[in-house]
Length: 105
Image (tube, rainbow, N blue to C red; front, side, top):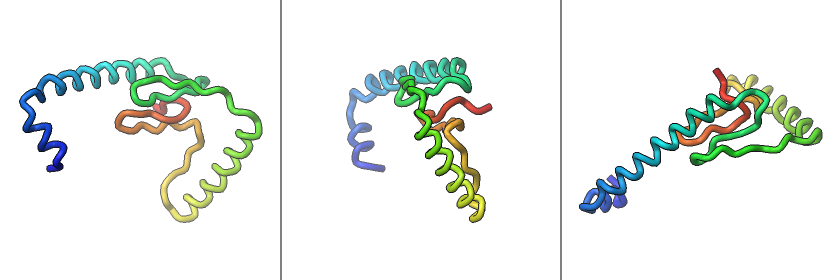
């Protein structure tokens, strides 16, 4: 067990901040669920650290470069049988954050 956890467990006031943290995480989960219900393929937004982050539309040069790099990376991944490569339209779900363009079914 790390020293941080040992220090927390030794603190008699631990239940109060732990309850506060649990409440905050539950509220964040509600916002995340609402985000997943709201987001669609035409909306470029992400859920980062409990907040919805909107993005402006990409310009043509950005789209061209992204598409070129995606093709190169896709060939690299496929040739080496490393898995799959997705463009920016794929939502990546991590423990607290979701990056990408829309929630995949």
